[in-house]
Length: 69
Image (cartoon, rainbow, N blue to C red; front, side, top):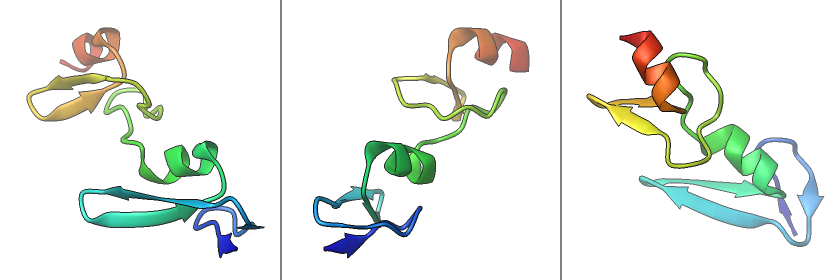
């Protein structure tokens, strides 16, 4: 069993995610998203879909990208 980096739960079905050289151990996708998903530069929600990359800045949607400009 491994311990979740976010909530500390020791879980038999934990998993690891590696992104850009950073690896984390999690017990759920919720914890993985909390720790590793980028945040929208306008509303700060977790970007768990494709998002919008505008000039190197990540937004959750086109609305936020337009509002931030």
